[in-house]
Image 1 (cartoon, rainbow, N blue to C red):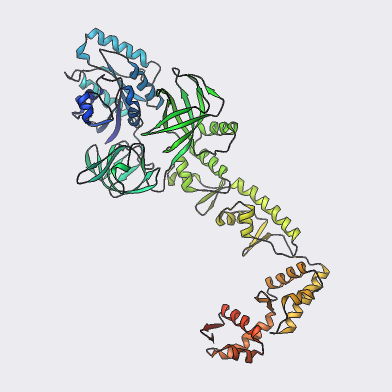
Image 2: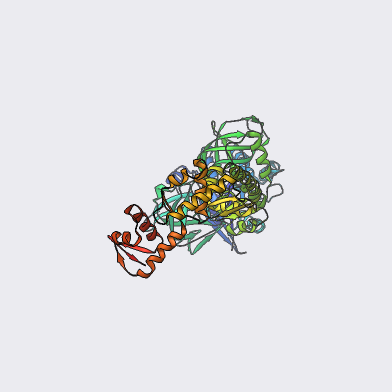
Length: 619
C-alpha cells in the first residue's frame, strides 16, 4: 500500500472541507466553533483508499487569513495539493497566499479543483478554469489537471478520484528507512486510553511498545498503541497519518510544534543557515529583521541575518541565517515559510542548508560556508563538519547535524579522510598538522629538560590540545610516527639521553651512595647535596636512576639500591606464611622504625607482605 498525503489549499468558503467530505465521507470540521460558524479554524483529517493500492491521507486546512499559521502546520508534509478555487468567486487573496506557500514548501504535484460548479453557468466554469490555468502558469501546477466539481451533486468527483489515482502513482513515497520524525499537530486525552498525539509521519517507522524521544526537551515516552488512518496497527511508516497512544507525559505537555524522534538520534536547533526566497510581492527585507519562522508544525520567532548583504530585494534569493527564539527540530533539506512580524503575512520561504553552524564567524566566512554546503552531497557535508570540529566530533553529533542513518554515515567514514577515536571521528588532515605541532612542542621540551624522558600525556592533552579526549590523544600519538609513548610519558622517537661529564659523575656518586648504605640509607636531600651538581640537575639524575630501575623509590625521602631490596626479599623468603610485627622486622633487618615502617608499606604494595591489624604475614 502506497501512502500519499494530500493537502487542500485555497480561500475561505471555497468548499475545501465539503470537497474532502464528498470524496471520503469523513467530516473534517471537528470543533464546535467550526460547526457553529460554518468555517474551518484548525486542521482536519480524512483518508481514502483507492483500488490501485493507493491510500490517501487528507489534510484539510483553514482558508481564513487569521488561521494561516494553522494552515502552515498542516502543509509541511503534503505530497499532492488540491488547489481549490470556487467557481462563483475565482481567485482570491488566500488562494494566492496558499499557493505561494505550496511553491515555497517545494510541493511538486497537484490538481486544480474548481468547486461549486453547480452554482454557476458552464461558461463561467470554463472562464474560471482559464483564469486558474493562467494563475498557475510557470509553476509546478502548469499543465496539471483542472477538474470542475460539485460537492453537493457529485459532479466531477469520479474524475477527481481518477486524477488523484493517476497523480498519486507518480509521487515519490516518503522513506521509511530514515530516522523516525513525527511532527505533532494535535494532542488530546482519550478516556480509557490516556494521551494521544497525531501527525504526519515524515520519515522512518514507529512500532507499538517503542521508546521514543520528544524534541526539543529530550523527554522519553513509550508508545502503547499505534493507529494509522483511524485503524489500529502494529506500526506506522513514513507517509501515513499517524496517531500514537503514549505514556510519559500528559496531553497538556504535548503540543503542536514538538517532534517525536528515535532516542539519541536527532535534536532541535536554534541556528539555521538557509537558502531563502523573498516573494516578489513582499517589501525589501533588512538584516536583523524580526520574522515568524514556520517549519513542519512548528512556529518560532526569529531574527534574520543576511549573510551576503544588508537587505534582500523582492523576488531575490539569498543565503541567510535565522536565529530562532525557540529550538525547532530541522535537518538540511527541510522546507520552511517566513512571515512578517507585523503585519503577519507570508513573505517568503526556502530550504535549510545547515543547522548549528559556528556562531563566531564573520559574515563573509559564513556566506562562503553556506555556498559550499548549499549543493553539498552527504559525503561532502560530513567532510566539512569533521574538518570544522578539529579535535573530533561524535558520530551521534554527525547524525543529528545531517540526518544520515548510522549505516549511511558508516559508509562515508572510511580512510583516507577520517580517523576513528572511540565514538569520535577525526579529520586526518587536522591530525597530521596537530602531530607536527606536538613534535615541535616535545622537541622544545627535550631541549629545556635534557635529563627528563619526555612530557606527560595529561599535560599534552590538557595544556597543548585544549582538553581533547584521551582517545583522541592516543590516535594522534599512533599516527605521528616521530613520537613515542612509554606509559604515561611521550618523547620524540629519536630522542636519546646524553649526559654531560659532570652529570655522569653525579649519577655514579648518587647510585654508589645508596648502594653502599644497604637498608640504612641517607636522606635524598643529603645524597643530592653531595652529588657535585646543582639541585635541579641532581633531582633529574635521581629520577633518571629510578626510571631505569637502578634505584628503588620507597617514599618521598627514602630511596634504596635494588641489591638492598633483593637482599630484604631473600631475608623474608624462608619466613613465608609467618606472622610478625614491626619489632620483629626491626630485629631481622637491623633497621630503626624510621626505615622499618616505609619498607613494610613498600612490601605491602609489592604483595610481599600483607598487613592484618597490628601484624603482617609474609606472602
